[in-house]
Image 1 (cartoon, one colour):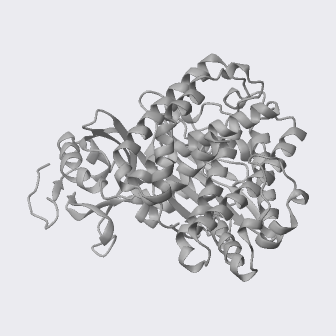
Image 2: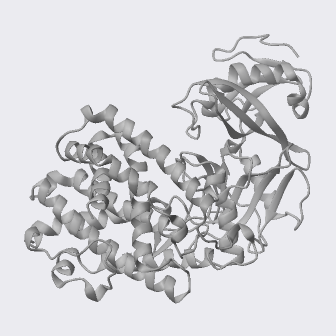
Image 3: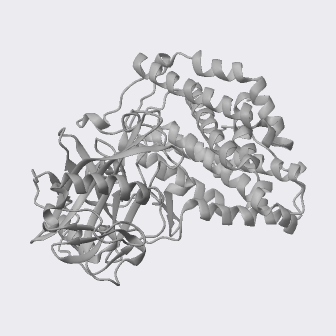
Length: 542
């Protein structure tokens, strides 16, 4: 095999006398492919998560064949090493195409193999590859002991391939829609373990028959050279929907805030309620219903029920140890405090370095945060978690309105991969179920304030008045959610602990979440830092 016998305008063209199926056995090809080609290609991809770090080099950690009846593609596991002394793994399936008109936008490398000129491309852009993967899952045997293991659920039967397409723009994964009924998600950033999304989806769907998540239909896992089980793909039922709960909420909120002028609502006269009061719909005052309407509250109540049902399913397992509930202990306390203090210190530094970017309410709240940093640190450190009586279970871990689909006044919960900043091991640690509730509460808070920031020119009230209305609405929404959620979980004997314990955990998790968000806002849109800072202020002053 010789390098660059002819020059392409973009990259050197490789020539190989060997067939395609033997290409990756050539160490000089692999070396140059990784060094000269993939280093440039990978940084341009939407799914590449290392853009803020400096790449040192790429290694081929593993490769395997994805094949059927003589049709062969390669799956590459790429290890990207960074100057900052850490690494990430990515999955890239590749195909060789000879048609000059094909995949013009998605070529990785012009190449000549066995006297045939063509291109190496990302195989997901090739329909023949997408069809092959579908058929491998659809015809999977119950026990697959090969290196690449295809699994099919009992719910996935009598299927023939009709069509496939990309689902749309995604950040970290690539989703393919089959027959307009099924979705296969290829995980791009991968971990040397089962992906929590695969593990949780399969458990909820197959074992617990939880209806408000896309049904698990199949998967592709790789057993690597260290015998670790790596999830590459997850097949699920597609849920036709009216968009996600974030978009839905923003539309509803715009109507509610437009009502202030339309219905001549006096914000100062609106009745308020305590934070974290457990409410039923009948507890919400007529003035609030008159302003906001009943619809938003009935929808919040439904979402609280679905969230409770998810946690009840996750907390009702007594055989599979990955899912059996457990209590608080010293190991968990140490793990949590270390994680929290590291994150807290990181955000503290970020605030101090970005204070000059803040103004008005955001600056006032940031100064309050800095003034009270020791008080917040004590909140994290001075509590003995072993006194708690509730249970820890596997949770969603990254629960917010963007992870929930809306369909016919009901909600479907997606994406169980867990918190993006966490390691794969941390994502499987059993946590208080109220951590998911806190994630959703922060999402409600965000939606309310995002609506104000996005539409303030359209509302007549002052920003101060709009913020006041925002806080009142937030209290009623979260109060109703909490009231519904606690009742549902108690009726099913999911142990969230005693009332004071629940409020403590909720506040702790809200604080953790708001501090986590603060880093993002300060780095990307400082004017929005007021939202997590207001959340922190609510907690430390409550």
